[in-house]
Length: 347
Image 1 (cartoon, rainbow, N blue to C red):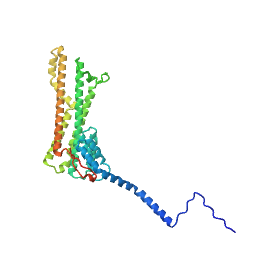
Image 2 (cartoon, helix red, strand yellow):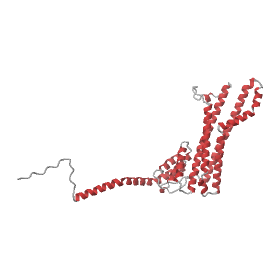
Image 3 (cartoon, helix red, strand yellow):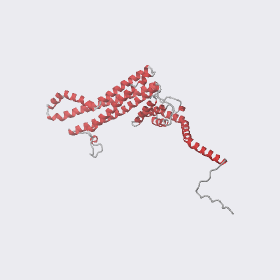
Image 4 (cartoon, rainbow, N blue to C red):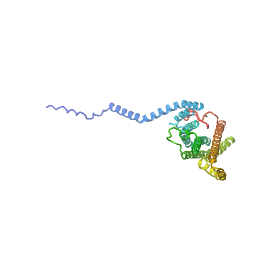
């Protein structure tokens, strides 16, 4: 009697597990595979960090060169790269970035400068008072520069408002006037609204006043007071606070709402003179009004020119003060190899 052969295993079934040497080889292969998969993210992170550390020194050197060459915006771009994966004194990267942007004095870059300097101040919570004082000073300067920009814009709007009011008064009196002021596009489609211009002037002067107030408040933070300062530095800090107070007062006094109070009092004081001029005859009424408008416009223009001249002189004095105290070049706050790059002094 013959026994039948065993049936062939159906296809698709699992193959029998290897035994002996083959089983050990398969187990080792599985362990190596899982080990590689588990350590791959760590390896990639170390590779990226190594590349960044290798490039940190040339990036810091390039940023410092651009800063010293006066290309503050380009320097800020390079300093901004250092903010990524900066695990050693990360506040310095934000400080350098914000300082370079603030030095550019670009109206849009100032917002980013304030953000970076504010972040640097938070990250430097456990640093020395001297280092926090540097951040505090530059943050205050950034707000002050922003206030200067808004102040200049408000003065430009005030000059535009004066021209529009003068042209409207001359037109209503039947006198010659600059038609381009009331019809800038030459098609008669749009005439400037004095009330809208006056509100713009009011708003921008208020913006400047608020920014000067913020800058003064930051100057009063305790870090600089706790740091070791020379008598000259203390004197300059006091002078800066006084300067900010004066700028606040100037911005407040220049607001149309506050100017209106003074004009009202002046008008009440000269009411008798206006009545006596009116009694002189109807023929001279138009000339009297125009003469008064011309005098007011001339006085306003002289005040604007004086304010602009004072602002320029103050800016030049401020820049000279910073150069005398801190120098024109960026400082070397740390070794570029430490992951933070060269530090930038208060400008």
